[in-house]
Structures are given as structure tokens and as C-alpha cells.
Image 1 (cartoon, one colour):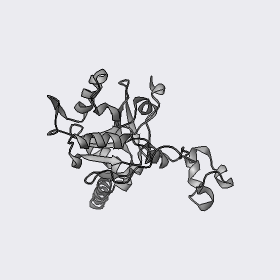
Image 2 (cartoon, rainbow, N blue to C red):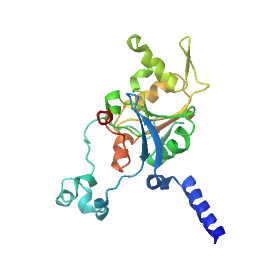
Image 3 (cartoon, rainbow, N blue to C red):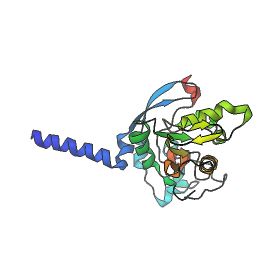
Image 4 (cartoon, one colour):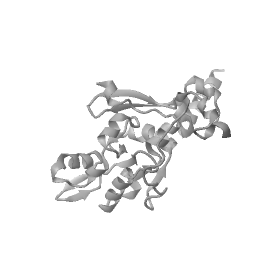
Length: 234
């Protein structure tokens, strides 16, 4: 009996370790640093209110604006503006991998949280967007800080330091560059693609760049955890 119990525990541990589909259920524990320096321990998981379990994805309630969808509680629905932005391609550059939610969770748990000196999750949006809510454990490096601006030298230096890139005589040393996963607002958002484009042009290794195309819109669309509005933690 004891051997059987040990075997079951090992099997479940092995399953959790290998199958990223378990992560939204199991949860991923992280420590998030807000832009004001405050830290918060957060469990990233799929947040499904109990009341929502009675509603399925059917033709009648899938489309917004119909009678059936109006009967569904607000906490069980997600609504986005869908008429702005420019739809981005699935592949930005050959050699740069595009990922989904499970890969993001696995990256956070198995890489960024374990070896932050080698891996980093980057929110490419402006600071005000980041402060409204982001993927827990993400670091904010706005897309326009990768280009030198005489008025924002410190932001420029900070951006490359966070990525593990050394600046020497206006040249870039990528020998210790981190593997970085970028995201922004969604498939229609150009901010993370712009950041990636700048880095590729200056020689950042493509094999060390990952892109979460779905971004915040896809993340909250499947009810995964966001950080709080910074106003709530002051």
C-alpha cells in the first residue's frame, strides 16, 4: 500500500512537471514587483467563479449581443474593443517562436522564476498600461526605450541591463543576453512587435526571443490572473 501511494504521488508530480495543460489548474506561484517597488506574492491560475460553471460555450451564448448572452452574469463574460489596432502576423521573423498561454505559464514557472538571470518576461506596453494590470512577474520595458533618446538615457540603459545586454562604446554585447518573452495588448497590438524589430535589427539573437502574440486580451479572455491596478496597492 505504501509503495502504491508513493508511486501515485510520483506519477502526479511527473504529470505536473511534464504537462503544461495542468498549470492553469495547479497554478503558478510568482512574486510580482510593481512599478512603485511594492512586491506581491500571486498565484497565476484560471479564475472561474462557481456561478459560471453552469454556462457552456454554445452557439446561442457565444456571440455577444444576443438574448442568451444577456442572461449570463457579467463575471462570466469578457468584452473587448475589437475595432482598433493592426492585426499582426503569426510569425514576425523566421527563427522567433510565437507562443500561447500554456507556454507562457511554463516559461514563468520553469525558467523566469527559477533563473531570472537567464530568462525574463517583458511587458512592452507603456507604464500606465502596465500599472493597470499585467501578467504577474512580468517586467515593464516600454517598446520605445530600446532606442537611445538623449532625454531618456537612463531608461535606455535600464532596458538593456534588464535584458542582460552590455553597452560598450555604442556597441551591444549579447554574450550574456537573456531569453526574453515579449507581449503587449493583443494580436492587434504593435508594441511588442516594434520592440522585437528593434532588437533584431541591432543583432539580438533570434533564438533568445519569444513572442506571446495573444497578449493581455487573450490572457484575460481565458480568465488567467492579472495583477491589481497599482492604485489598489498603495
